[in-house]
Length: 266
Image (cartoon, rainbow, N blue to C red):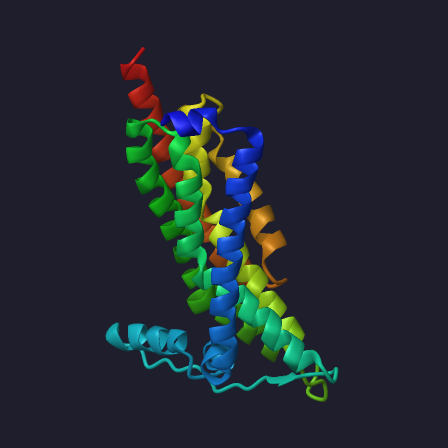
């Protein structure tokens, strides 16, 4: 740590934080404007899961074809509507902001690292970079899993479900985008479970043996969490439960590695 950083006052730190947030805001806003201008491409990507020819269905059909089964999804169509005069325009703005922040997330991560790095020792700084990259990688994996697997299946099931033939589903654009953004962000966050386990094991709150001992209880808790964060259908809940439990098992491995390293230095 340099002398300038050691002598920096609390107000100085606040000023650095203010400048960092301002830069993040500018970059996010600039990307949001670019995304707003490319409306056709943006909503072609966002609305792709509503199509019966979405890539997920081709992948599943190809998988069954390789193992010798002639399986094909039946075509489906779900109408999206806008009920308010300004709803499409406001949804366009809010969606551009969401995507702008998502696209700016690597820069946000870089700025956060710059903000905390002066307070780190050289060996801590060396380990912090891989941790930041791993956090971001897990977040992106969660986002991609939501977009390519969870949301399309959930939308297909809920959008085409009908209690009677005379009842037809028409989904508002606001509802679609809200569900899409919520599920995507939640999956990005819950994929941080191994990182959380790493830090909790590092400070001695959890042990690998404890996590392994309470697997059954953890599975029940994961089921409840999956039921809360997903739309109300069983298939999506199962699809969320499986990777969450896999992350729990990975967390046990991570905690075991941390506990082993700590025991060496005792």
